[in-house]
Length: 105
Length: 105
DNA sequence: ACTATATACATCGGAAGCCGATATAACGGA
DNA sequence: TCCGTTATATCGGCTTCCGATGTATATAGT
Image 1 (cartoon, rainbow over the protein chains, first blue to last red):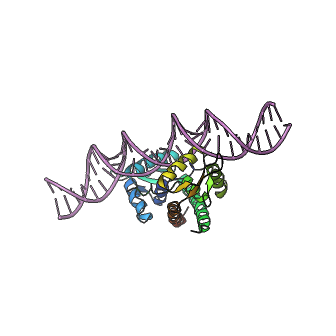
Image 2: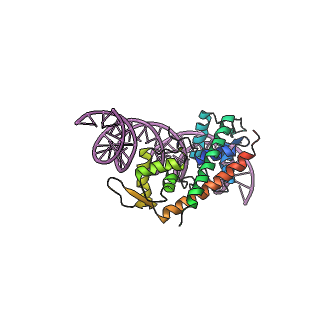
Image 3: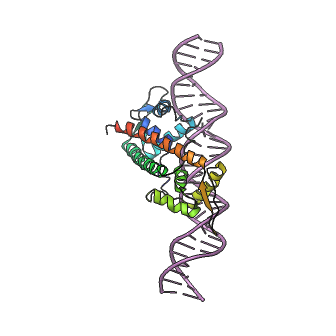
């Protein structure tokens, strides 16, 4: 019933955003940093752990791979999750702007 | 280092937003639910745990209390943290909108 | 007077997520 | 040859959240 658990972590959100096209794990790391203007640097443990749980949820799936690389692609369920998260963020941001905007100091 | 740990949790963000005026713990629970349009319901463990850690960080402080109630107020450091979090959320939302907007399906 | 509900604070164990360190290994350039 | 980059993976530790449980008072209905 927890509404908070339904929120995606920033790591997961950027992983999903990084998969506009199929990409391998290390590429996701770099793309997430690029998409966030250098702010989000995924630790290895975070990334590879998330890749496992995201596959279990059916939000990403293997997309082959060349050599050592393992590529992943986002699934329709993954896109839906990212869109739902965006809606949550928009509401949260709006609420924050409204409330903080009323602070006098 | 970790850019992700610098993010506030939704629970903490709403607790700070709830403290536009001094309020006691149980009141924060209700105010957070109200501010989020019923979406965020803080569990007791989450709330009272967070009140302790937020005091340790100096983001909130005791503000007296009538009878059983313990009131808290937000500190300048707490307001700064909330504003920084809002900026992060604005950037995150903007990035999400841009990238998801380019998805074809 | 009895009972139910709301108010109010607090702690506990479990689950999940993130981090940094560590390990392994192939590749390319100096 | 040595080093930095690429690349995947696991581990222990820490923090945070949740739901359950416990305790206690206040209020309102019957």
